Length: 237
Length: 237
Image (cartoon, rainbow over all chains, first blue to last red; front, side, top):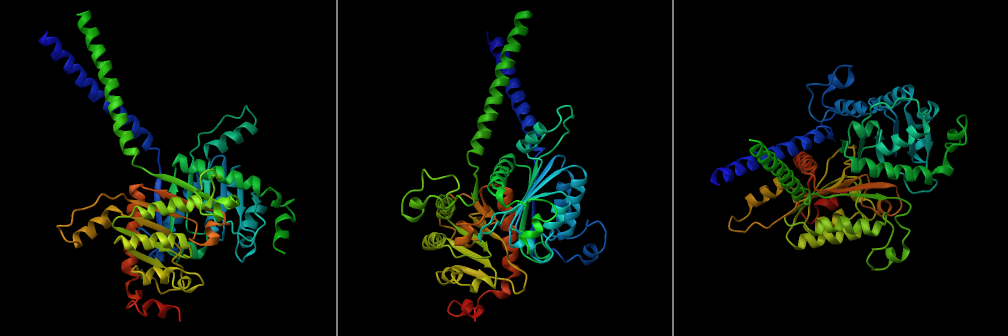
């Protein structure tokens, strides 16, 4: 009787430990997929002159290095397989523009919502993006479309795009990720101001930002350019 | 032999299930403490006129309701026990100001870093906060202090404040939380623009934002007002 009880306790203990380890590893397995990078831009972000103004890797610079931060954002754009949705108040950064060009050339669908006043300011890259194949929409009010975020390959959006595609096309692996924060994508935003930026794969955040993007996209529909040759240019005359 | 094996399998299975349940409940126990609220401001945020312009509870309005969003932010300010650190580009919202007044009257230490140009604009509440006991600092450059965040009772900051206090004072329970996003704390930011705001208790985010706040606080030291009667006013002449 005592031996049987001992046996039971032993196996139960082993089982409890096993179950806990099992749960621990399955949880760790998911969290390994998660990305959270917090980028702070400040007066030190441009204090690595050699690395900022030459085409060198940015390793070894301080942790606020804007060149490194921009590279971290570009890495997310470069991993896009299906789609990038951009909501940006002001966008003049040429490195991000080049990454969006690369994405477009890979067949990634890019949609942009932006601010109707800022789209016409000096250095804005919205028109360049539009001319290269991105769709662009904006509201028609004096209120500001003040978001600064991009969402890459969010699950619901990818599924929607896959439904529209040829069903014989084999789905590719993809990874949902987003970048958002206080910074506009400008020289001042990345190279001088005190700003924050977050890169995250948090599914709730991605889902909510994607949802709001989709809602804006529908809501701004009537302000989309009628055609590629003169549509967006007309907004700036 | 077979009975013993059966017994072992039974107890192991029970243990595995027990261990998994145990881990599940302990994990749920932690996650219950976690807060993540995503606030979207858009053209619908001011579409509940009765609830926006009368002093009524905001329940029943649409999920973008700006009055409800502002109440959610205020709830975080109202829970502050020890400290609130604010980094804000533009601040004119009177409801948030009232919540900061309440915090100051509870003995909460409030520090503010802001932008030297925006502090002097019409409707700015920074001077009001300063005159009520908040400490204020700002950089002295043409670059913008463009953050829009507040951190409430972050652990390292609370520990630092407790070290400065009378050791016989019994520590109070506190909960670290922060609010950040694209929106300035203005009428336009909360009532018209397309903006995002996040309320989170994520420890990594809190720690990183607190760290950057502390670094700015030291970096902006020389621009702090010399005294309460004329210090900050001098910045606006």
